[in-house]
Each structure stands twice: as C-alpha cells, then as structure tokens.
Length: 404
Image 1: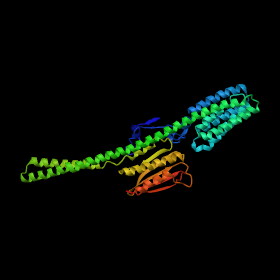
Image 2 (image 1 turned 90 degrees about the horizontal axis):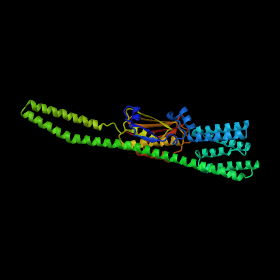
Image 3 (image 1 turned 135 degrees about the horizontal axis):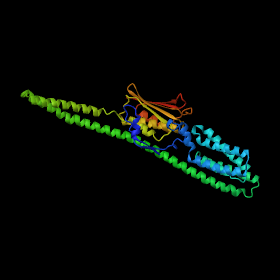
Image 4 (image 1 turned 180 degrees about the vertical axis):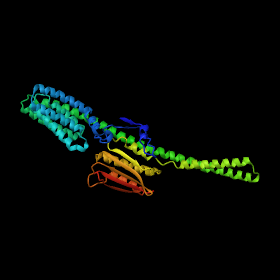
C-alpha cells in the first residue's frame, strides 16, 4: 500500500479547488488486477506483472524442472515444450482482464505442454509444472472451476503413467494431487486476502470522501453562523452608535465627535465586508472528495475537470454527484475494464451538468442494474435528469443534469 499525501495532491489541483486530499491508502494492483492507467501502464505495468512473486516462483520451479529433464530426457522436443510452457506461463500473467481469451489460450498451452512432457519423460519431474498451473488458475478463477480442471489433468497423468507401465501410478498421482490442492488453497486464500484489502480500501476512500464533504459543510455552517452574529449583533449596535454620534454632533459639533463617527462608519463597513466574505465561502470542495473516492482505483484512472464557475453549496447535491461518480467508477472497473474515466462538471445555463465517459467496452443493450437505478433515483429526487448511452469510444457515457 502507498500513501497519497495532501501536498502532492495540491500540487496539481485545478484553479479554484483546494484538492487537499487526506492521506489515502490504496492497493497497488489488486482492485483492478490489470492496471491500464498511465501511472500504471505501458512497460512499467508489464514489468511489474513479470516480477510478481508468483511469476518468480513459477520461473524458478520451471528452471529446476528443465535442468532435471535435460539431464534425464534430452532432446529438442523437450526443449521446445519447456520453452512453450514458460512463454505461455509468463504471457498468461502479463495478460490483463481485457485479454481473457489470450489468457485462456495460454493456460491451454501450459497444460498441453506439461502433459506432453509427462508423456516424454514418465519418470521425470514434469507433473510439478501442473502444480504451478493449478496455483496460477486459482489466482484467476474460483475453486469450483479450478478443482475439476485439476482432476482432469491428474486423470490424464494417471493414464500416461499407466500406459508407460509405472508400478504405482495412483500413489504418484495422489502425491502430486496433494501438492496441487495445497497450491490451489494457498492461492485462493491469497486472492481472498487481496479482495478483502480492496474492499477495505474502497470503504476507506468512501469514508474519506464523505468526511471531506462533511468537513466542508460544517465549516460553511460555522462561517454562516459567525456571519449572522456579526451582522445581527455587531452591525446592529454599530448602526445605533453611529446614529447617536450623529445626534451629538448635531447638538454640539466638535472635531472629536466627527472623527469617532467617521471611525464607526469605517468599522461598520469593514464588518459588512467580513460578513460578505464569510458568506461567499466558495462552496463545498467537491474536487477533493471525488479524488479521494477514486484514489484506490489503479484502473480506471480518473480524469477530473471542474470548470472555474462551478460551485456546489448544497450538501445533498454534492452527495448525489459523489455517488454518481462512484457508481460510474465501479461499473467501469468491474464490467467495462476501462483504462480511463473522464468526469467533467460544468454549468449549463443556471444548472449543473456532470458528464462521465469511460473508454471500456459497453455491452449492448445497456441494462440498468441496482447501482444505476439507485443513481437515477437520487438524481430524480433533486429534480434532475439522467441519460445513459454508449460512448463513441465504445464505453458508457453518463450525462446528469441538475437544476440551479
């Protein structure tokens, strides 16, 4: 996990928005297991995947098996199968969720190469490669999918050993099956821990975003209270003081009374200026809240644009905007495998518009689930309108309009 400091967040903030994002801890890879955002993308992303602990352990295991097989069963067929297995193993771990078919093809190549090696060297250590494959599958799919595949592969190994006349194929297959079960359960619990960490990071970000809005709302409420006290108490008494000074000056003019009356007039003007400044606080810091909400997501990356004239003062409106962007983030990461989410807040006449678009893959026809239905209900409660359609880039475009 890595911290996002407030100072770093402020450095790139848009004009007119504070973006004082509190420290947010977020996961480096697991929330979107295929990070495609610029800060996680390109060669650095591929290198990070290649250096994943599972890849390093699998490569070391492959090296040990290769050394064993080349010593006991030399030949170009063994070398070719070993190379095919290693390339498929690394390619499957580098492939992201948007390349699911490529990943499946790599798993098939791994299984076929490992079984072919078992056929060529029935007394070798080739079944160890199937143990690595099962661990790899458990990091990608659920156990109810992995276990049947492991049983089928073990059955194939048993038949191969029987064909080659192994004295006790069942015992050997059961021993490797035990290793496979251990590897699958270890990967399963590691994946479960990552998913729990992801959910905790999302809840943490949600709380931080809500806290940012609540803190701004509380500050605005206190400013308004102080402004009212100054206007109603100090302003009222200063006005009465000026009237009395004018009466004294009219009854018995003197330079001192004139100076005091002038100072009271200036003080009353200063207080009115302070009251005006306190009332004009600039609205809620929706920029900070939205960025804190998106902090745990390595993909999609949030591209937030808030026009200079946008000021959100209503906490209910700010909460609705926050939940709208949150639902768009979740859908883009979970269903669309998007790399980028563009969010723009701007004025449309006297109303507020929120335009959201991702670069993922929208499935047609677009169906509204519970999340989008809840989004529409929140917007309707504020008298707004919602439009959801497929974007030109293939993702989803959401247009929400709110009245002034």
